Structure formats: structure tokens, C-alpha cells
Length: 239
Image (tube, rainbow, N blue to C red; front, top):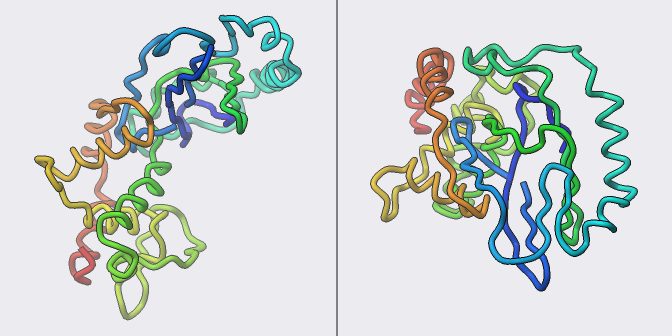
């Protein structure tokens, strides 16, 4: 995954232990979830960290053409300062645009990394498919489809557009759809729905995830558009 901090990005970490090796893969935080990253791994063996390899296979990994390719790509693009960091959430505007990392995970679980691939960040809208999956697991396809459709919107992720006649969001990947799917999550043994959501996200990640309080506060102070969408959904009895 090629990422530059301050933009929407996706990170998942899972520790997999096997004979003679331990792999740490990178996957997911919500729009306000911070990766509670730990160092090292569980058990003996190979540990891959930010492109540096230690353990019994380090010489072969260091000489890997995949690692060499990522390093060349990083060197080629690290100086590209075009574009801007996200500023619609004030806290995201503080990100350093020079942060740049590349991470690649192969089908057999090998990890190749270079740059700031281990820098913590919130994943923003990448949380939406995870929430949609949890809603499907919680309520089932028929109930979820009563609250959100699966049609392309052709509009911005934060557009205030609902389906004519039904008032449903067009799909779960726009903000309106994400609000609708989140409303379907029941605590089921947890004190609050957010506690269950964090628990399920942590299951995806393979470790505990938490709330980035600075980003949460920043979004809460400025999220008027999302609140407007939520009221429209309530008026349509979608939430």
C-alpha cells in the first residue's frame, strides 16, 4: 500500500507465528482509531520492521528484488510534494506531508517495507467496509438493504444525497451510508456500540485498537455536515 500521511490510508497489523518466523502485517483503524502498535513480535524467528529484516532469513530478504524495487520507488517519489494534506478535519492538517511509506505483503505473508510505513495514522473512510461487514454480520443482508442500497453514487463521499422515494443512502461507502450501517450495530455484550465496533476492528487487525482522541475531538467540533446527514436519515426513518 502506497501512502502519504494526511490522506486517507489503510493500515492493518496481524502477528502470525509459524515455524522459525514471526510476521507482522499492517490493516485497520476507524476514522478515529489509532493503531496501538507494539514493537517486536510474539515468539522467536523472523521479524520484519520498516524494510529492515532480522532473523535467520535476513540475508535472502535483504537481497530480495522486491525490497530493492520498493526502495527504488521510494527514492523516486519521496521528493514529490505535490498536492495537499487533508484539511477538512483540522487535526489532519497538522500532518507532515513529507511522511511517506510503502508496504507490500505477499500471499505467503512476507512483508516488504520502506520509509515511514509504521507511522501511526487514522484510516478515515477505509473504516466503512469494515463497518458494513459488521452490520451484515449483525443484522443480515435483508435488514441492511432496507437501510442502505448498494448502487454507485457518482458523487463526493460527503454528499448530502439520498435515494428518491426511500430516503436510503445509495451505498455504504459514502458518509450517509456509513452513518446508516453504524446505526445498525448493537452492543451485544458491550456497554456501547462503539465498544463492539472497536472490538471487531481489533479482531480484523489482530491486536487492540483505540481512539485517537485528538482526531475525534477535531471531527466532533467540525462535523456539522455529517450531523445534517444524520438528521435527514432520521427524518426518512432510515436511522
